[in-house]
Length: 301
Ligand code: ATP
Ligand code: MG
Image 1: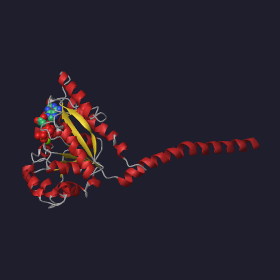
Image 2: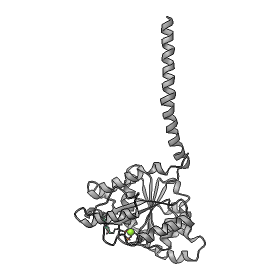
Image 3: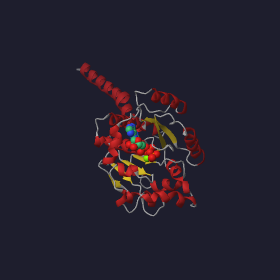
């Protein structure tokens, strides 16, 4: 009888010890990860920037946004380009809109009031309208002119997991607003001979913003676009790119794909237009790679 009691007590001790060592530790570790994210959840603001034209900024903003949404994230694309390619490319007719990003940045309407739905349930767009072409001129004489987009996004950044800003192909005041509003900068680089031209100037601009305006803005990384595995040129560009970004070139490389070029004329992301194409798979991988970096962005406890 005594032995049975002692055995039961022994078992209890063993269970308690197991609980303390494994379960409690695991629960604490979980709480440690879950709590700060909940408490400080602000969404990541990523600007897609390259002053070089036609390198795949808009294609990346649309399709990365679509696949982040497919992964269950709440995503807003902000179209900061007067060409409004992101807006039309995701299926919103900007001609029919009375207001867009231009009015929101100038504080004439709230950003949340211009947001439009897309065919993806958790993907929205703050649309550009042709009026945006006048924004540079409007901003020039304003106080805190570099902060206008940043300020207009403050009230909605809690509503989204990701805000992707599609910048125009310049390094002017509009793009400067795009950089100042961002936590991270994503740089699409086309796998072409002259693709690396201007990268030095772009990195210098981001460093200036970091030094003088937003100390917490970081380079998220570079993504190689329109890659053609049949040409040696694409590999040469990739090698050169390592000189600019020794640590942060995305493993996911976006191939040259006719389907990616066709999708915007149907107002569809590649996820809806042709999910089995190689371009679709590449953007899906990129979205997952970016989600993997969420842990690095969590504040230290
Ligand atoms: P801009 O500087 O004018 O804003 P951008 O950098 O946003 O241009 P996109 O509009 O995304 O570049 O792409 C330029 C052109 O290349 C578009 O016609 C687009 O459909 C096409 N394109 C983009 N990525 C790819 C790709 N991976 N394969 C084939 N075509 C592509
Ligand atoms: Mg564009």
